[in-house]
Length: 443
Image (cartoon, rainbow, N blue to C red; front, top):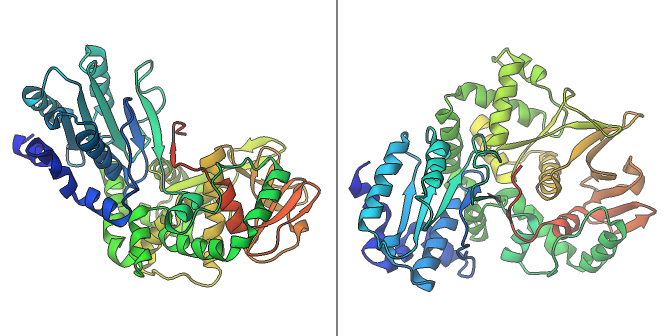
């Protein structure tokens, strides 16, 4: 690796205030000055989709170390691994870093998007085993969980954190107003959710407006900031986000045409039950096993989430799946990529909203499925003994074909009948959302 390139990526070696000129830091501080992160004294692997803000997170951590914790600038190394193929390039950077750093104080290493560097995990494990990291802290980020499984560093002092798009409550709190200061509430507690929904109901108009905006920006900060300035972020960011997602597919040596065709089938069958076999028959791919491989990769790249069917507490892994994009802005990027269309059509918003509910539930509880009853009725999502049915209109509570749970409407006054609650969807999303998008429990 060119040593000049390393120096360019670490301008604070010349002057610590150079961190304030970093493009991502400038944007974050200009858009929302209090939206910042503080250093955590742990070795961390940070996982999340492309363009979600992982690099901004790292740069704000570096800012905290430089300006508020007075760390020697030459003891902080940042390296983007997007264009690194060989782990030896990382070793070259670390050797150079060691030569010019202050050897008497703690050092901090930030390796951004490392997950596609060949044998990166073996290299990092070697750093742990050799004692190289004894007097250092290391932050790693990646947009793929393919090689970042829980057994990657058994017994090593490193934690894994998911960095996901903002959930609805965080979005409302950041861009609108804080309605409720509490943390998330468990949906199994039907009465508690109902009582809280009544307290929040006076804000239904504001929450519905926020949900409409969330459809266009998702939980990504950059699109959200652009949208707040009355611009559609798809016009400014499409190429950036599209290229980011496609580059990961290319790095895995996968066929971009197959990728596009599968995305098209997901869009056509959105909220419906799909199978790898039906997708293969409707595309030029031909093999359901190839489709399964691509779907698995897309899920591990945080592009989609696949929901299995459950019958009588049995998970039906071979049955048809329901597939949702992990964020509404990803939905928009993928739709534009396949069709060239950036606008929502009739009934499309209600389908995207169903996906938002499913992804929120999964990110909070993980153990989420859809159910088909013995009478052939479908329940959109089920967690343990609690069902959630999305009816983005105003329906009667008996449209929930489950003994316990929620019927989500547009703006009906919350109503409870036994173990069933009818509640506006925007209120439901707001009060169940986790307060912080950082979690130590990756899938």
